[in-house]
Length: 382
Image 1 (cartoon, one colour):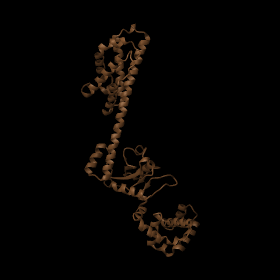
Image 2 (cartoon, rainbow, N blue to C red):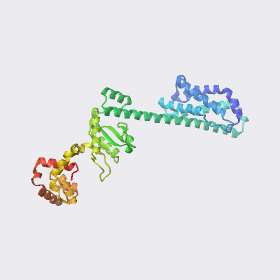
Image 3 (tube, rainbow, N blue to C red):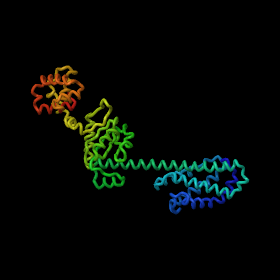
């Protein structure tokens, strides 16, 4: 530090007086600390001021770093303490600046500044405030670390709450854990699954009402679903492009069922990519497919029997007629919506339906046959 060592020699005997002046003035000049400087808080402030002053006076004429490792720890810990006390970092930095002003006044009273060259006086001010910047940086680092660790701990506890709900733990235990986190248990919710690799940004997009946790290669999202229309829109927006599957709504006590159905839908490959991108898959829109996938052997047998009239057709013709048959069954024979779904003219629909009636004959008039045909076609058989 470019200061004469005499300044340190002259000021060191009055360090205790400077410390007391700073301790006395901080509550007055920094309103957030308007409290008795006693107990753990007072000890921490006194320690910080004393270490800072002694270290500053050790620096002139040396190449020592502004802060020793122990000193750095002290100021990081002061920054952490501000987070724990619910105060802003600016309050602590204001106290540092106040301490610098008191120190400068003490130097001016103790040292005959008229005997100092102007460049020494300038260096004194610059050195003192550069030193305060070092203290501030250490405290800012401690403040940020404490915030990060607290956020991580808070997120960990939210993940534990999600697991408690999915495990079906006692209502008393879940309620206690939710209350401790300030999370209101919803009457109904949905559980979504998505690859853990697609999780980035989901917490921010859905906000604090959603519980999110990684579960190996998959992640689970638990979302209150009281306002159905708004929540549907919110989930569609936040989970778009993430290969998400959203289970049906359930009371929170039955959240595991929503998760089970979402996982089952994913295992059966329901709701793949669409022309508009990878939209979230809502299990409630695919319940029939999920039912028929539950017994794949039985479904395959049923498909072979019901789709036998399409055997022998060229693959392209078979696929086209199967697609038309499913649309015809879904829209109960109404040509306009069938044509709109298939992007063809209504006359084309009529031609294809005529072909189907020739192939299937009276089966298309049988309610049971129509039901079974729709089942196997929805299951993806062609």
